[in-house]
Length: 388
Image (tube, rainbow, N blue to C red):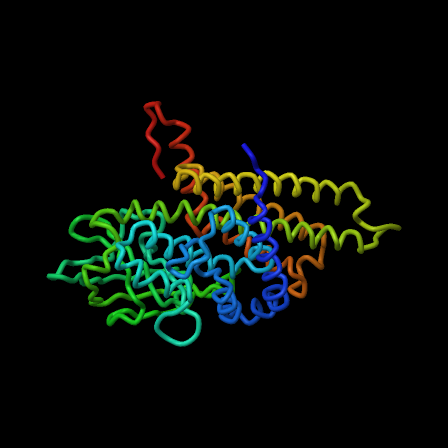
């Protein structure tokens, strides 16, 4: 297998890194402290074509392959995981779901709008993914949101929680129980009956607005149904696979930058007669982290390559996601230790990265759920019942 990037992919990587270095890095700390969505950054990302990263040119997209998209997520994750999560939710979960499962009329109506960051309301508008509920997180069999058929319309009632991009949303992808089973619906946020409510305060990812969304008598045309009735779980699973690799790429960027920040600090911090980088204890922390970063890199790139080749990952997406969450937590923890008290100070970027890394075990499906999926593959063929 050839792991070399093409010349075009190298060009894209340089462009993505320049964007992140010039537009995100200078304001990342201030945005985190202010806990406000990075709307200005996302508006600039829209002008660069990043909000339509994997969409075809006919829908105003950049038509990137998934490896190149992973390079974009890696570059964004280096400087601000929040920006990467907002963009990944928009592209991987919403835009690509419509691209893969939508009708031609739905693609024409929504993909160009998503690529441009447009929609109802002022400023940039993103896609948001409405699956999780107060009593239904990883267990989608417990969905309480209902979509009742009413002639040429559906009437949706329910509550969605932890909706990333909630207050920035122009378009919601909502999952509900319809007469034929779990079904996906495209719902513009200005539809009557949609209310974007409370924003959750969070330990990390402080620039991602996670909101509760209420749907009360929300009436949408049957033409807004994505796919057929009962295909919602398939659509959600495919979106989750894409998001697993995208989050893995963002985690890789976070890990790389954390390692670089702490290693540079170690060359400058003098204790006991010399730079702490000369101490074996510090070298071991850095070396172990570098090993894990390289292992994660090849898992992410291979996962992205598989999505380009076959369009699906199966349990491999869970492998990428679970390992990325573990590596991000372990590496940022070690790098805080390398920097000592300075690593624990909010004046330095590692404190933010440490907080953000913890979220990777929760968003995109809890690590425990991904481990169940991996176990299902391992025990496939044996008479063993695997259940969460």
